[in-house]
Each structure stands twice: as structure tokens, then as C-alpha cells.
Image (cartoon, rainbow, N blue to C red):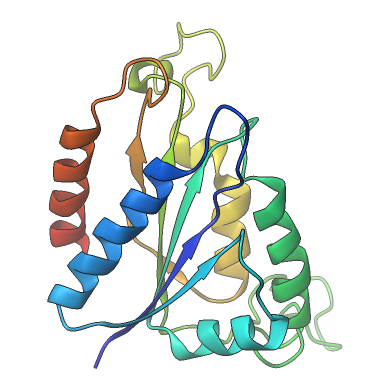
Length: 194
């Protein structure tokens, strides 16, 4: 049986209570269940245990991270999760140190990941419209893509040997939302990448 860990990284703010991210997590878990996955979940607003989270990562064939984008990155609660869980996993659970050896201390940094058979996918919600990306004439992102913006997170997963699936994005969710279409696009995306 295939095994998936779904992480809801939403941090509640006065203007964003987390209903959309929760609904997307529900859609993702329902889809995975229909495809025969065994599923474990973690939500940032709930209590979680570092060792249990490490065990979930080792157990999973697939990790899906559902997160809003706050100030061009993840909410602080997920950053805390990464700092605590991923740091604890560096020495034998998620990676074997940083991949370098005494014989070649300048080579292979980041190549010590132990999750070589694990895929990951990011599913993100943005206030920014889709047109803000991949267009050099746009002011803020200057032609950069969503994956360019989230390059550090891709590297965090790569550090543990995980392999990327294409990122899914809901754009303009606060000022020009099209949630029903986003749900349809999510199901199509999951059907194509899994």
C-alpha cells in the first residue's frame, strides 16, 4: 500500500482563518484515499511530537505540503516545525549528516539524504495573481516563477533525498478567488502527477 504524509502548514491570522487550506487538505486526502493510499496528517495548529514527525517522514512514500504563502514564504509555525523536526532528523533518520566525507570535505554537500524513495509536492495558496509570475515586466517577482521563490524549500526536501512532483498553486485567493475551479484544477493536477 502506498503511504502519504499530508502537512497543513496554515498559521491562523486575523484575515485568514485557514478554511481554504483545510479544504485543500481534505480534497488531497480524499483523492489519495480513493487511490488506495494510507494517510497520516499533521497540522501546525495542533500539537505534534518531533520523533513522531520523523517517523511519519520515514514511513511515507509521498509528502504533500499544503501551505499559504505569507511574506514570500511559509508561516512561522511551519518554519519552527522544520527547525525542530528536520534538524533532529539530520543524523540518521532523514539524512546521514550533510553528505560530505572526511576524505572529500568540499564535495557533495547536501547529498546525505536517506529518503531517496520519497516524493514530495507543494500545494500553495497565494494572494498574488498568477500573472505576477514568469513575466519580467511584473514589478515584484521580476520574471521569477513560484518554484524560483520556493527554491530554498525545494533544497530542504532535496537535502533529505526527496524527489519533487510539480507544484500546485491557487492564485489570488483573497481578492479574486475562484475556489471551485481551484478544486477542479487540484484534482486534475493530482491525477496527472500521482
